Image 1 (cartoon, rainbow, N blue to C red):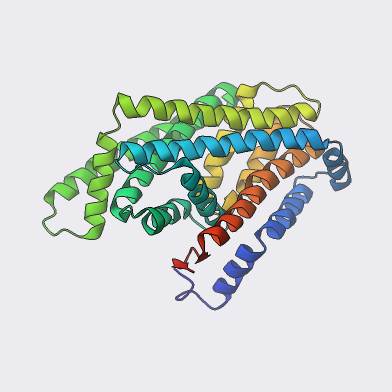
Image 2 (tube, helix red, strand yellow; image 1 turned 90 degrees about the horizontal axis):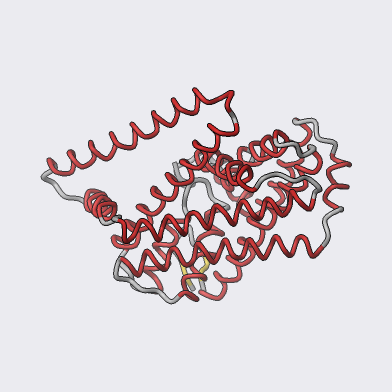
Length: 323
């Protein structure tokens, strides 16, 4: 369903969320805090205890996370025969991330593909298949961290996690087996079948020479995200192992991604509040940590993406328009 075919109310709601998404996020976080029984006054006090240098230290780690993503995209495109300067890749990353955080679904990848076609003249068929393969591999890597970590730290739900993991792996293997069989038997070729064949071909090229660098990049990303949380939690006065926070970040990310809600609003926040509280952080401090984390991760990306769009002359990423 798009805005042209949706009922009249839905386009207005989506437009409002896109324009005022940060305000929407704050209101939703306050509502969730009330539902979870968090004392808002104590939450504000916990937020006020953070020093400026502590927030800046967190921002510095966040920028390292962004740099890691940018280097990963540059590596994948170079391996596919389409080298893109890191500076321009950084611009495309922030531009697509801004769209990804404010529109339902995973639009960051197609927006990146469109930008690469528009400014680097890389065919959509090449970039989109590379990015889609990367998404599935990176998502699986994060899911693996979430599953293994859940088995270690949430023993009560061990059986449920094992069943979910088994079902996920079985469905993934079955999907690719069926897809390859169907593509081999299809006589009529379309743009969709060509794209799926290129995606499968990209998967088959993920041998040790490509997988090891990618796993290293994904591992660095998980470590940086966990370290960023560890800083905020440590500044709040609680000593939690970084490995626990890596698991919490991975699980909350997976839950937020599966929801397909922009920024995983609500889903990711509730799960992170739950994990931080489970690990021993009081609810007001947990709320302050989630607020700072989401404000920096989402707010800074959106502002940088907005500035990049102006620089690139992009008017409407969703509609594919440019100045």
